[in-house]
Image 1: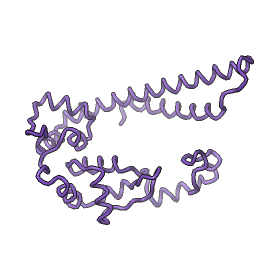
Image 2: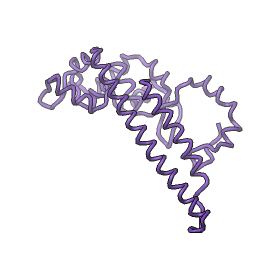
Image 3: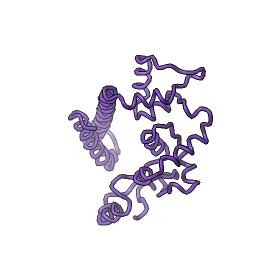
Amino acid sequence: MPAPDVDGERWSARLAEENRGNGATVIAMFGDDPPIGSARAAARLASRIGLDVERRDVEVLVAQGDLKVISRFRGYPVYLMRDLDRLDPESIRRVVSARKGPLLDSVDATGAAMILAWPRRSFDLIAIERALPTDQLGRYALDDIQALATDENLARRVLEEKRRLALAKTRRSETRIEDALRSWLLQCTAYVDRTVDQPPDPATIGREIRALVTARAETARYERGEE
């Protein structure tokens, strides 16, 4: 793949069109899912094995030769999801255990939310509702957190909350982009009416329109109740 030709990190429409055929080759080599960074990799592993995996654990797995850095984005390593899903659970547990030591059987609120793949706000609310006990350090028993993961009613409730939050986020994004487009149109009108000497950047309109199309598609998806 050629290097980005716009601001050092984006590909122009021209370059993308010239290399359109390369997409099939890339997908065949690396799969349909794009690579993810260390934070998302840790979250994926945490949800998979029921332990609070951290970014440094991912780095240890790389250092041990269990996981491969497939590329870098803005200088940070990224990983293929299929490689993460192939990792031996026991290897992950050993790395987490070595880091946590005597704290292996407990987890803080952030780690609990990561294990459950819940928004932190949702976990805090449910922890209060369920009166989940904590130890002297304010940590939750790992067994209690893993038990929450098997509660189907809670899973449906949290899924609905995640959809609601995602919908609110995409709607805010739509509003921001719409405001930017209106501002561009006003600047364009001002230039046409000769009240300003310089026209607005023509590249802006295309970028914002594409962003609005994407945001509205996301909004429609969440409104349909899709993940």
